[in-house]
Every structure is written in C-alpha cells, then in structure tokens.
Length: 626
Image 1 (cartoon, helix red, strand yellow):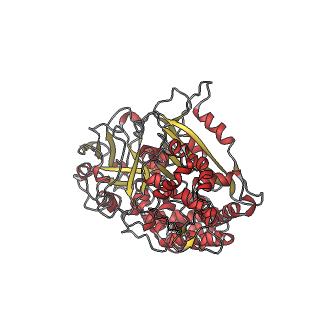
Image 2 (tube, one colour; image 1 turned 60 degrees about the vertical axis):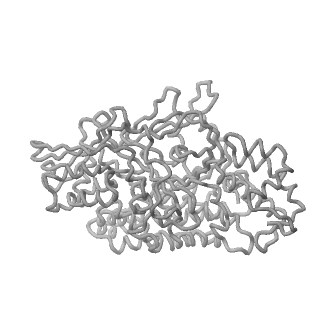
Image 3 (cartoon, one colour; image 1 turned 120 degrees about the horizontal axis):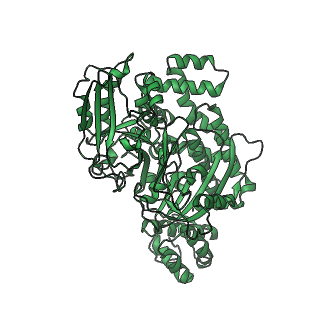
C-alpha cells in the first residue's frame, strides 16, 4: 500500500500502523462490547488525518491525495472490523412493492453518483457502499430490488447507468425496469380483466392495475407472477431455474435473510367461523370437497410465525443456511401440519397429521438449491392472508382456479425439494386433475405442506430478523409505521399482538425493542416518534411529484425478549434509519409511469449540489462509509 518503501501488510495492518497516533481512541471505541462504526469514524477521523498526512499511499498505480488517504484507511478499518466480528452490521430493505424498488434504487444510485470521482465510471463495487454490511435483510418488494441486485448483472448495470446520468435516472429506470415487464403484461394478459383494462385506458391507475391483475389471473399463482416479474425486470438474467446459489460475485461472503411469515393457524387463534384453507375441484358446490389446513401446535401462538430463508451468498450450491428457519422456541417440538379432507358437505372427514416439524431442516440444508423466484414470492405474498379470511377466501376461490389459495406460496417441510413437492400435490387440486384421490390429504400431511406469506404480516422492515441473526448495528430503508410495530405501546405489552385489517385479514406486531430509562410514562412508540421528529430531512421542492421528505437519523435502543424471533433481552442496538421517500403505494391502483417520475425526483434531490452539506445527506453518507 505504501510507495515510500515501508513494508506494511494490507488492510488491518494499515490500521495498526496508524493506531499509535490514535492513542486510546482505537481501544476505547473499536474494542468496546458493542462498537459503532459511525462512533469510531467520528472520534478517530481527526487522528487518521494527522497520521497519514505525510505518508504516500497508493492503491495499485494510483497515488492517493490527502483526503483520499483518510477515506481509504477509515473504510479499510471499518470493513475489517466487521469481518473480524467486532461489529455485526446489517442493511435492511423494507417491503412495499414497486415503491420499495423505486426508493431503494434511487437512493443507491444517488449514493454511487456522489461517491464517484469526477470523470470516473460509477460502479457498485467500486463505490464500496455495501462493503461494511455482513447481512442483507429484505421483505417483500425490498426482495424484488435486492434479488435483482444480487442475481442480475443487467440490473446492476441499470443502477450504475442511473448513477452515471442522474438527470436521466427516471427514464433509465422506466425503460429498463418497469416498461419491459408491463409491456409483457399488456401483450399476454387475457380474459375479462384485460378487456376491462383496455376499456379503462383513459384512467391509467385503474387500467395499469387491471393489466397486471389480469396477468396474475392468467398465471394462476403468485409464485408464477413473481417469476415473470423477476425475469422481465432483469432482461432474462433471473429465470425459473435460477437458484439461491447463483448470486453475483460482489456479494460473496454476505448473508441474505429473505424474511417472510409462516402461516400457523391453530383452533385457539382462529375464529370458529373461519375454515383455514379451501382447495376444491368443485365449481358450483365448493363445500362438497374441501381440504383444510391447520397447525397442531401451541394454543398461545400467533397466527403467523416470523421466518426467514438464510442465504450464504457466494458459498456454492451445496451450502446450508447459517441460521435457523424459525426461532428455536417459536414452535413446540411436537408441532406438525394437520390436513383434513371434507367430503359430502362434511358428512365424511379424513384427518391426517405430518411428522413433527423439528427445525425445518429442509428449508435450511442446502438452502442454495432452492428456486430464487419461489423464495422471493414467499417473502412478497401480500395477499396470502386471504386463506385466513373466510369470506375473502371463498370469493377468490371462484376466481381463476382457486386463486385465493394460490396467492400464498406452499412448501413441503418434509421434502428435500420443498417447493416442487408442494406444487405436485396442490396443483391437481386447483386444476381438477384426476390424480386427486382419497389419499391426497394424507399425502399433503406426510409431506408437511405449509403456507408461507409476506414478511409484512410479521415485520415489514426486515430489522427483526437481522437482530435475531446477531446484528447490533442496523441501517434500514423503512417507514415510521413499520418501525413503530417493533416497539411497545406500554410496558405491559405481551410478546405479540394481533390486529385485523379492514378485510378481516390478521396481522401481528412483535415488540422487540425498548428504551432504557423511560420512567415518565412515555411509551416506547411515543419516544420513537419524538426522536424521529427531530431527525434532519431532505425535503423535496413543491413541484416534485410523488416524493415526500426523506428523514435520516439514528436511534439507540435495547432489545426486549421475544421468543417468536428468538431475541434475548438487554442487547443494545443502533438503528440508522432512512424513512419515507415517496407518496406512491405498492402498485395497486397506481399509474406505473409515476414510479419513474418518483425515481427522477429522488435522484435529483439527493444529487443536487445545494444538498451536498445538508445534515440529512451527511448522515445518510455516514451510514454508507466509502
């Protein structure tokens, strides 16, 4: 590294060579129980500046100038501290459909643009923006974004092009991401929804939704829809056969947590008026043949259990997950699937139970062999909760081929090929195949077939699973609403609370965080609101459409014990938050062209020169040391 003839080993030794000038700052900050990268950076940067002032430092053939030397040493120490296990860092991407993709692509492209030297070509790897994060955690639409970034060179190049031409970022995003997929939906959609969409062309928000809603109907399942979405938004890089083990080299060594929810209905957490699942091969008289799923487990458990696929990126196809599928105590050891076939309007019932789940080994062993689109579909199955809402489920059962049940993603816990086995058993039910026999319920039980739903139902931020996996410093693209669900409304809160959306679909909140010293009657949620109200913001011009203020700041909190996530109490966690960004929703009843406008406005906002020294942008850059 040093041209001036000094023999210095790379990286961590460069930091050690500077440490003598830093004195106690290094030991007190980098070796504390739970060190903070940003705390280290702020207290030690002046010492680094002095230490490298007269040192000629080069990377390759390029001799670094003074400020470049400071940035280089600080980044190397930060990254090596993470790799050495001194700091457990995570970056999380909230769910929110196309809104998530728009915000996250815009902010990342803007940061790459700001980190690129004048005249240089913007590069994700070259920017080092994501180097410090050992764990990447996603929910729903955040998984759409990150899966493309992890598995598609085309999409990485798209983001880099946005960074290279900030004034054209919206058009680049529209032409390269939104339009290819929407063109496919317009051309291949069929049935009454497409016909209605063509009639409603003068109302883009309605017609756009009808076009892609018609595409879901045509494909007959959420998983098939997500496979098509990933394929067409990555120019074919992500295919139906793409597995989790085929990630791009830039992310090697990191872990990707694909957060979702295991639907876990037992009699005690369901209303008596609601059957749990409804698969039928009768169109006129659906009650004549029903297949009902329940879980035989603890009476006190929530209707959804937080779950994750833990993906060791770059570890090869044989690699296993580095952490469990669900928390060790989330389900009792005796928990199992229970399938009941009801015939003749309930006159005869056949009930069968699966073997005990254990720790869902087939979801963790050789996880990298699982199909990428199925895993992303599970994490983003936003409508999967209809299987728990009797009226909605029954209505959607009449649409398509029992589409209501196929809005969830099903996996067979007892099979080494979880998704393929579940499809082989469930497809005949939906498509009225003669292979459906009186043994079907037994086969479903023996395979341990279970429904998976969007992570939104348990934690839309991805923070919970990141902390459960050991992260103590988390940077998160999220919303205030999603954040508040992780904090208690009072000290008497239990480990979870269930709420029902207007459609009677249940949703569960898990308070996993608290604050020390809140003795004035203030709830943790109220304290979060008070803290975030004081955060600096990046505010859009009034003329900027579909954009809202981006709020940036840091919260120090402490964990509450939560068995459903497997989080113990008393762990201090630093949350670096990027809140807000757009007024657009997930995609339903939105004009899809508006996402490109949103992207352009966010990129323009962050890259404009007058924002360069704003407190919010300085804080944002601090979350991503380069």
